[in-house]
Length: 300
Image (cartoon, rainbow, N blue to C red; front, side, top):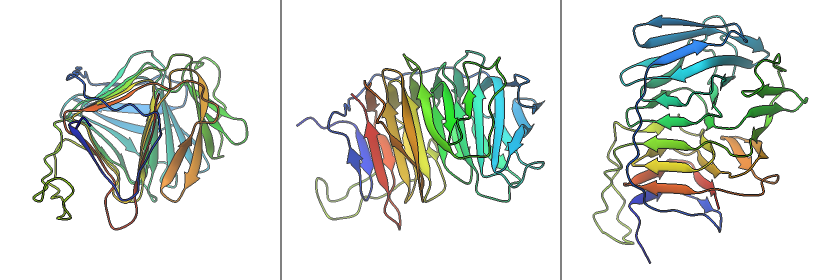
């Protein structure tokens, strides 16, 4: 049996039978700060240096919709979803329509909300998270290279048909529609520094050493990646007592968003072909905590 340089820490985990896990060579990408509204959802972006403050959007019930022509955040920069004018929303749906990859190597956060807020970031062109990327949001985080988000009443928030007025709704999302060749998602990091004093299958607890290079959500929430191939190189994904969801899809199909107390579970009933999930360089998926957590991964 080959031992791979990554580690799962979880209370209950589920891996699909065909899942591929393998080490990969380091992948790197540069991130130039650029967050710009495309003018379709009343999104306002105020820039101060390399920091971007995002306001307004279109508010439908507890849902808030933002649309960007570009969304990239460089090292030591930030993109802040400021909810001063929309404090009662619970979910932000954001799309990137300009056909440029989103390079994230800074902070994404929410401010001035009355509720824990979940965030969807959708860019069909691709998403890269650098080793300095971080999150500060109150709810779940779903990042996807799907083409559109579908809702229970038939509404659709599309990133590829942005010229058509979006069908915005206060209903809950039911699925993510992927195109025929979904773009990949890459996540970089410095890898974990966990220690197991007993070695092997010892019952001595593993020592968790905090890492400055991690993507994490608040305890009890979902951290999800859904796209084409998923490349995690030294990535650290943390959802204490929550869920880490990894989905790699090669062909078009609707991936269901199934609500649960921790956020969402991904369902693949309409998917015909899966891609690869690659983890290397001491990547870590951590859902340990007081409550039961889970890692769910689907690939070819």
